Length: 239
Image 1 (cartoon, rainbow, N blue to C red):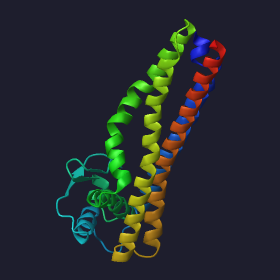
Image 2: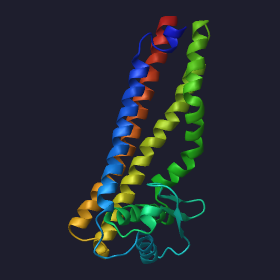
Image 3: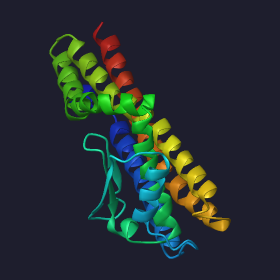
Image 4: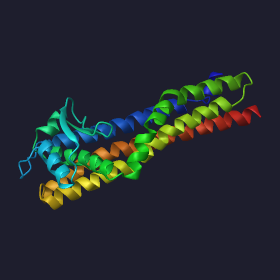
């Protein structure tokens, strides 16, 4: 039974280690890049909160609140309450990194106001992805275990579908995040809030952040393919 569930080898654990390593490298890159450009003050002297408010106003968005939130790189936009939450190092800082992150989060608020399709889909998909994240792999384990006793592979396939919901979410997140960064950089440059090498720095910060989403999608896809192969292999052995 153990051989069936774990594919008779250590490939599952190897995949987990690779995924963890890639995620840690991506997260480390974000922290390093953010820390570097947090030391570079922008020529405009405006704080992240001020820039966020100015961009919202420029786009005619007057129903979004801006508030500080504890933590580092905990910045996010909540479409349900229309609240832009900026971490303390971003809210009060006038650094290149802070302005880049603040503008990126405003990008999500603009997407929401303009009914950006990928954002709407991602928001609607959150509950589905949550179920997949909680039950997907567990259901696959149960299904593969049942197959050892001659049971149907249906349960395992249901688990794979649930896990696929998580993978779909990670891939839908990519255009949402890339578009928000694109909007941020264009707005910062056109408004003159950041100029020259400051734009380069902000782009590096946002690119490093985007890498974490790319890694998450890649790891989720690898896991999905792995489980699909395990289920198909077990099914062939049982036929």
